Image (cartoon, rainbow, N blue to C red; front, top):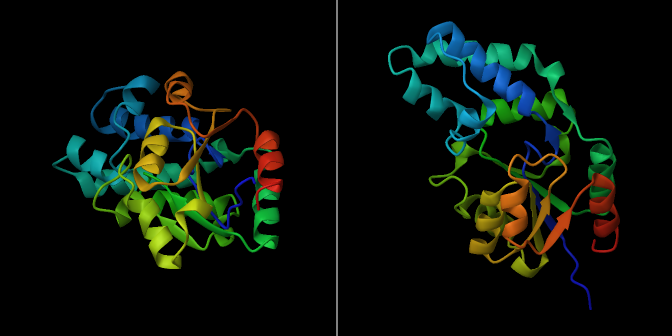
Length: 215
């Protein structure tokens, strides 16, 4: 008998939302302004893990508070550069009509996560939100997954993580839940595929078709 899920955890960037261009431009806005330095996408991706605020505090130790304000101002003001993947909002709507508990587990800080979720009108679909600010150990630690499971006292066999990057796979495996890797916009597609996730999807439609039989 195929497994059914009553709790689903989503990553944000590269999973729900196309935000890489916005993130890269926001980051380079502050580095060119304050450091006179431009970073390639690969260099920015290599910094991922800590939250935006932690990265800023490390790179701008003398004026981190000022740089954070500049970052969020640009990130919010240029948010038209980001969008939901087509079909994603309809998928979330279907999951909610079936009373599935939905969570976010993202490495983004809470402020950036909330800006994106509210501007793209998906904030209210989620019952629980775990950001990089809400955990002691960011991905690939499973701490954020376990927070959701424990909060709702869920059976791990009925919880699914959906993400686009290797840390999502590692975190899901560490927690003991299944992982669906989505690679329609993954910055690390080859690495993800090498990890042999439980499920792999190349389009939102493929993911929606799968979930329609499992919830």
